[in-house]
Image (cartoon, rainbow, N blue to C red; front, top):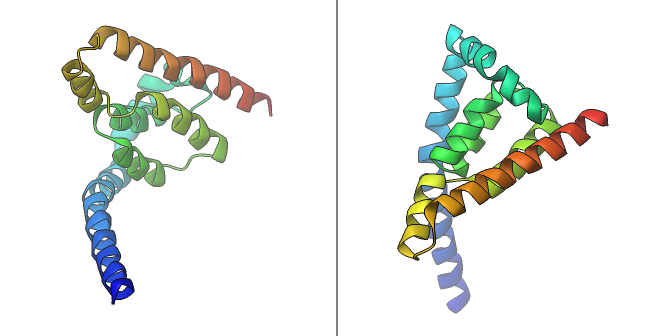
Length: 142
């Protein structure tokens, strides 16, 4: 009886979680996929290529980093799946976002805890940039 209840509860929680994540990932995936067929992606690529080369990433990767930092990691996942990236490029982006994801929400939480917001943002973004440069450049050597 307890096993059946646990399975039922787990199934329901799994469906709820899938629905919650799907509400973020699917729309972002669709929007980025649609943008690929417009000049917008080309404009973003041209604009951000100089910066993204620091991390050995294509200009389109800026979209993923912005979504991951401003919204959340799930929006970045939706964008990653819509853009053709190599395994190494996804690794670089993942490492960078592991330091700096969801900046707005997590900075608000940090502020409530009484920790200096500027310091936290600087450390998180700084670590993301440093790790992106190091891993991106090492990946470029492989």
